[in-house]
Image (tube, rainbow, N blue to C red; front, side, top):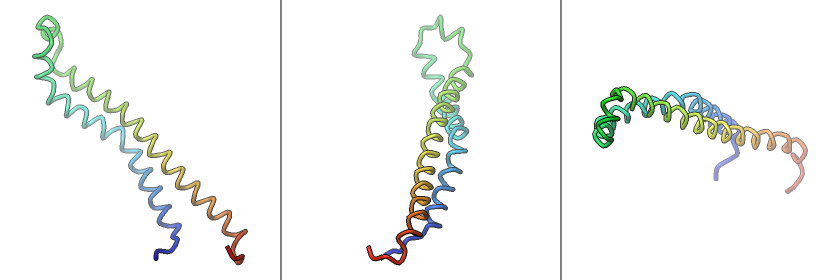
Length: 104
């Protein structure tokens, strides 16, 4: 059976914070890459009057912005998960002192 290890929870919270800081840039890069792949097909699907006025770089930029916004949301979710883990860690530390030595 495993024993309680507060360092494990702290490491996981730190890892979640690192992922949160990189979520927006990575999602933006992924959005730009997808935009480059989708751009030719998307520009062919819209009417020629619109597609001739729209440069090819617009689609990857729009996808990059959407990726950035999605990454910001994902980063916020990861930070909330890290805070929940740290809160549980603090609750355990605060209650351990009061209940240590007493039978459960």
